[in-house]
Image (cartoon, rainbow, N blue to C red):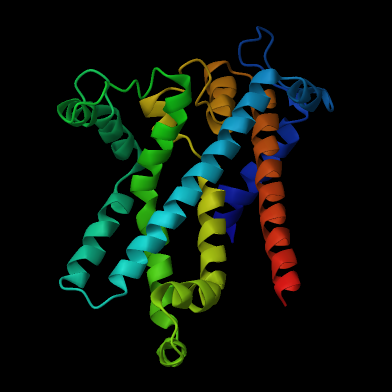
Length: 277
């Protein structure tokens, strides 16, 4: 209990109190003093914060959707009686075992616009050299691709476990009635997998909001602020510029974003379930 208090609850309360204070390490007189809602008023009018909020939301929706689709496809494949299934299951999990910083450095080399192997392969195939990081429209999708490579195994292992737990009798009965593979997936497998899918998407979505490592290493938030998430902005404000009070307000704004995202996601699912019922 003491360990939990020290590592989670105390920092949460301390940063909440700090969000209502002015504590700027660059100020000569130093110290912190109470300023009420001033940090949050500044936040509401901060165009850069709203840009980082948009980047974070777009990243979460894009990356998690891609990871779910790929993870479900791989899980469906591994759920078949294929040769070397155990080997492929372990091999697909390897990217998730790497640290995010290591993945980011590998991604920076792979997507390097001048000497990266991805552009070299595209060039050999007759395609153009793609500005992965210098183009504002391509930089964020590049981060999504790298994040999908690392975290698709997370989706895959959860969905694979869900597929393994489904009763085979339902599929067998549907096949006897003449259902094809698509009808089996659309009307039986996918609906029965819904609780597992919701859990996987929600957990991965909450984690994706905390994006920091790969952005910090690969793009630094650039070009400009095209790939700067809320977490990186809070780090720059607090650790680089020394404005700890405002950085705490940004961090709590991210917490509010995560709570709203979770509530909207779950409420939408409840409405759909009620309408289908």
